[in-house]
Image 1: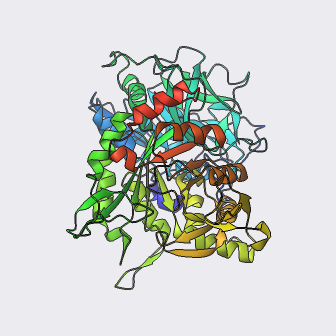
Image 2 (image 1 turned 30 degrees about the vertical axis):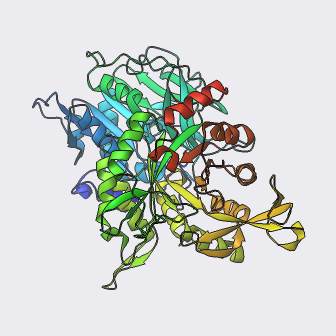
Image 3 (image 1 turned 135 degrees about the horizontal axis):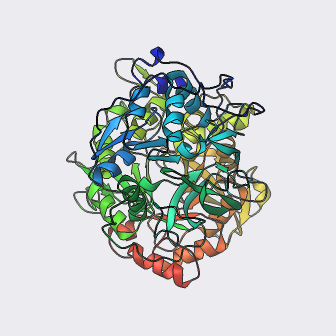
Length: 594
């Protein structure tokens, strides 16, 4: 990954390799923002000279231009879109002097700490960045862009950070049942005048990370806000004109846009007065899902199945058409959806990167939708008609570059889990392992599609079975959940419980838990299944399939450990508005983002 990222900078080899200054007694650790990386990065022991050889030019920088330090990993398209949405142009850093010439600099760190530091050091960008920050010039670091400012991280080390702020970045402790990664909308507590955070202390912002920096006496003067997730960690820092946030403002809706606006133009008032909220903790997420496929005319449409059947029961037997993907995504963003998920259910007959319409959907949706976007369908290894091999990592990378924040893997994850359970060895070759290794486990969702198999005696199968709330058709008291592939058409010899445990070990950061029996029925989520899986894993679980009324959402959140609930048809058909769901959850005492 580091080599790929380094290539994003032109003529990188001509620049000096250097690290920022650190204390002489500093002990090096591994660094990273998200999931552990399999690559090993040796800590550089070079101290930065006190004078930087590249001088900034005296030429004035246009007030409308934002300099972006994008080292080539992950989805930065959304941040670019947010900056342009606010009326600014973007200049990309190509060489260290571009940093020193910047009037305002944004560093959207995406991915893992080790590869990022490797690129910064090899290209000389790290030294330039330190010089820029030491001069108290306008800087905004985002997520990993905050963590890299610290001395070190405990992630799969050892690698030094930039060493600007005292402290070690450590992993959230999941031993007490805390779900890691920390994914979702959480509240921040402002500890001092933060300037860019004015008016959002009572609102939710979007986090997605496994590692965090902790406040201490040594870094107290830097900390401008904290967030509670297990413990109070650093949500933002400020010293003079230097800012950094652990959350993603470009994914935090209007609240996040106001943060970016204040940074880009501190003297301006925000165009809208912030809505007063009552955010106090991690909110339960309400996700809008769009099943996307081509209809018989070749047009890309949003559809919805009934137990995975998406065709109308008419003479024409046409594909059910509920609207255009980009239009619906934009509407759900305005309606208050916490995330938007695209599931490409067309299936790829040849080559997924040839599926340009779906990539265009992501590109256009991300221009005006400033909440997380997930895409699933066809993300696996491919060989095209000409014999050219494309790895699942290459396929996923194209989706990330097109605007996806997370990718969802279905059938391919089932096969990987089966192989892992058989051999007890992580091959590192599966799409799940490849993508989570490079982009972090927070970027990988595994979609599980099980159906109930009823039993009279749980000893009849080798898979985990449970006593069900509603007996089977012949009075059966037990059931196990058989996983399927190929859109639910083929059953596999693995249960949902076993699959969930295996994919967590292989690097999944989140589970999208469907239920074929409940799909399109509108009778509620399969609470038995969701409780089974959300209790079994330490990563977040999204409840899916079966929502038909607002009380189905409160039921699944009150009876299980689900972090989010997803719906499709009831939103598409306007039977249950997203806002109605959230108002109901608030009345039920369940925290949501408003």
